[in-house]
Length: 527
Image (cartoon, rainbow, N blue to C red; front, side, top):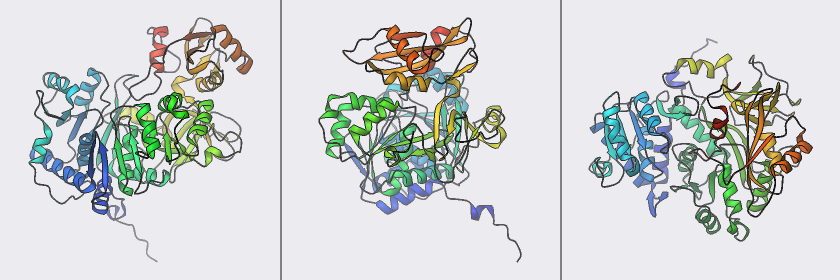
């Protein structure tokens, strides 16, 4: 039999534009979004996406041009993101709370042709016109202000039948990460890769036509990754601008929402609210938590409060949100240490725990290495940063920067970020392990452990602690508690009590801010 090599175009997967068009055509008059007291059907959403594409073209944009948005969560923001996905443009949505200098860097680095800002960031964009390295057109979400309002212009566009114009290999978005260790890095996502990630989410989270998915954290990042999967299945996306624990708990009880995505700090806030103990929350079907490590004692508390609906999702921007999953059922698996794991790989995702020589470490022995990934949706690299891309893909595997060990059954147990590991007197200390232990102290509400300089040992352990309301403890009490639990080497040498822990814009504990006053420009062994 003569062998035949398939044409690469015929064998390539479809793009994310096809998923969005499919959702619009299939679900038509169902409600696709609720936001700010307004509801929009799939048909209305499709018309708005079509009008946005027509406007981009009328403004002179061509495929691969970048559309930058500086905006808080809104339906309108996602319409423009979807218009980029369908129309073959590139969506760029840095976190709206980032600094002015970070935003200007992203604007110039991605070479944006068109910028849309909300009212709070409008003046920032006006100022950028004089500082940017290249010209761009700028508009505003909403009426008033200095910049021309975008939506009246979109409404003048005659909508056309929605057709996907993106190619599977097109760049469909750039998400800029970091800014905490130097300049932000633009993570490239291809159209086919975003589609693949969406299908993995749709399958894993069991979205259905009656799904009502809450997105209360920024849709520019983690929460936004669930919108296309929900639309694909015909559900409704409930977009909120900001986190309100009381309102969310009431919405859970009423059925206004039945799926949600939270970072662990949000889960803690919901559990600590008085309403959590009084409401019937059994209408919830899924609570996906991700973004940072969760305390084991607080996870056990969450399972008691919310029931068998919690799913842990582990991923990162470089492998769009879908590397490992610990399912709702696995949260109640009685075998040892299931709750301390981040789960097992998603379908078609290859994961290995590697040493510094990019060799797989033995599973089932507790040996810690770096999580490394190969997958169809793993980023090809960082925008205009070939050296960092080469580091990312060292040895042919994508290096996540997360340290873990793998048990005999294949479950991965993340011990910490590589950069957060503390090296004290030659010993590797993983803050997450200490944080879990401190969370078991009855007086501790939340805690972050960081490494601070030590003249003899290089680094030593500091715990920054928030006490529960009405509780009393002393630093020495917690130090002695940890010596008994973890031994003298791992026990914190310094304990500081604070009213609250600093958070990043995405709701994660900002450990860089906690370390910074102590290092004062000194170089850590791990950075």
